[in-house]
Length: 191
Length: 431
Image 1: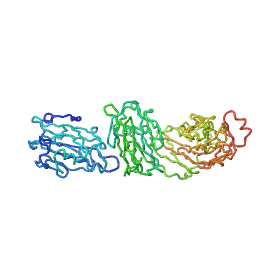
Image 2: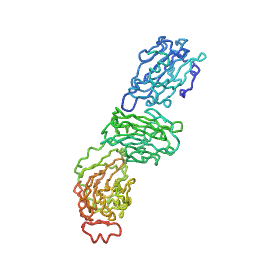
Image 3: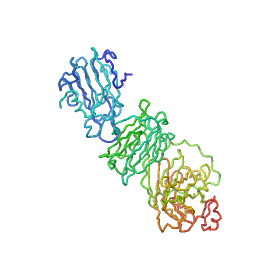
Image 4: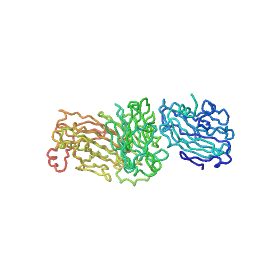
């Protein structure tokens, strides 16, 4: 049974699974069971320097740029409806390849056209983020966000970050209004 | 206090809660608000966990539909009495027969425990909406505004919540001729064979309103589920500022399979454990504007099986002599027939005014129960002016014919007068 974190908690990935080299970050949510416009949720990843900002636009991994400039982070593609079991979108990270001046990897999810469709995270059920050891398939840690969101349209699900030479994961669950655009501004991407 | 919008949640105060839902009205399309008690899987445990017009109190009263008026529906919820295993109470609004989408109301408002919520409805194509849910989180109750639903109405919403819905009955049509029932046997009936009970039929959410004389609708009775058919007559205060002239009586004549008639009224209450397998629940003597007068007759759903053939019932409203010259029509009597979530409303507009003067008995509807089928037919017949005769029925196949030649029946103490008047020639077996 994998460890489950609550909002704000963190865990040392290196200590929990010492063999961890390549991680798969799985993100999931349930497709809407009701009628109406589908929720199109998009996972995006920001590679952040000490400053809390990206070093360049090449550090922003999203549906139109599926790989980071350094090649360490690969987005496996966009799922438009949340249908299917397990992860709805996933991101692969080769931890050894992450440039040394990248301190944190922020994993975010935003609702596409949320304002136009009048949608918010509070209407999405069973959202989670989990970290899987890609080599063994074992789930290292999981965070269920269901009760940590409300009317936000952009959420930071979690962060993978360096701490005293090891990799840690923190359950963030912080929401914002304004969707992906607001998220980009937060991390220093000019769009 | 900010208003919750769809997706938002808030903690509720402890203690009993009143839930007010302001849904407004759509002319020509009825909005029904219901509550579903669901488990962690989002489904009801059984049909007994649906709180709606056909079942207004569930879980021993933990959730109750307190009333609907003026575009508002109110529930009471006692979180402390909600059974273990129930994790959410889901409030829904549905538009009867999908006659309009929710875009026809500007918004739906919600008030619970000092928290208010708002669901904007512009552009909505849905005819069934999940409005909000009360749910448990770390031992405390919270409310979340949802505002999502289905274009296919209740038929789509109910399975989502784990309720099987019977296919709606087809539009009221004349019932097909029934096969002639087997003649009753002269020898005593053999002991009933024990049969494996088929699973109960799903609760039906069909609601029919009959307004034209002769209009009819059918309810299928569920042999395995049993239960009673509840016939409720309701009338209002006639608004004449007198409280002593709103006394109407619901009465029924029961046509037995052997052709005899049985009288059922507050004075002749019958019973459910033996013939006639129907009972009058008691006399109510006046109505006020806030509390309409109501009298109820319960009929065993198995009446036809128990009495051994088709059973006819004629339901009438009688104005007590103490009312004086008040017209029954001014009290706007209506009647509902309910069985396991099926509701047939009988709303005949009896003529008021001069024509109604001296008319004592109004026949609202007849019911024919033949084995597991129950047909309600709206009548609207009235007794002749000044006549105390009672309505009588005869059966021809599946047709019930109403005539006004039953012997007058008065409340206790009026038997002498009844004998003197004695105009009706047909006598009841039990009077």
